[in-house]
Image (cartoon, rainbow, N blue to C red):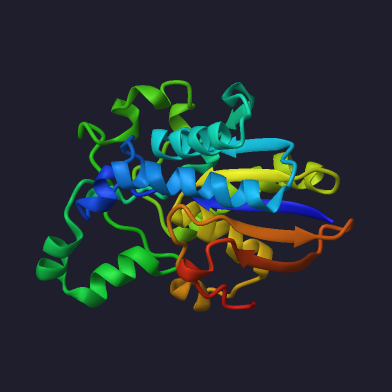
Amino acid sequence: MNHLILVRHGQSEWNFQKRFTGWVDIDLTAQGKLEAVKAGELIKEKKIKIDFFYSSLQKRAVNTLKLILNTLRIKDEKIIKAWELNERHYGALTGLNKDEMKKIYGDEKILEFRRSWNISPEPLNRNNPYHPINIEVYNNIPRDKIPDTESLKNTYDRVVKYFESNILPILKKKNILISAHGNSLRSLCKFLFKIDDVKISKLEIPTGNPLVINFNEKTEILGASYLDRSRAKDLVVF
């Protein structure tokens, strides 16, 4: 039996401020760092030997993974970073306060932007400092690959394509840990658990709580559970 461990990064500074973050490269809060260390401790208790470690390019996911690996006493130079695992791009909503936007657009419209399958916010102007083309960490990504906005479907397409090409083949024999984001992990869970386009809107991914998915040699799912049961969320299918 092999294991895939998914960890949403710990609380970020913009999570705390209730701002749409997307591709802006925001770091962890003190609480987020504690969540990451706790995630490492929970993984350590399971005594699973992890062979490969993946993260998005974004520092909140990278630093979460570094703290987990430090807790596991594993050198962090083994981290494989992939922009395809980045958070969803929130377009023109980027940087705005979610509560303030609810006052302007209403709860229903903001929920539609956040959780619908194939609806994207308005594109973010490329002159905006929050646009990924103006953020240094993304300089090596081909410009035609950098979005101006994304729906969850757009996020799903890039995440799943990368997963199928780079991670799934080695999951047959190895244990893998991925540190990523709410929407990139929702996309991956949609693919793995075959969640439909409507139910995916209800899937919540808690920060800093490792989700361990168990596979057989045919990479068929045998079961899945969160390690911190007190903060577990409904996986819809389990």
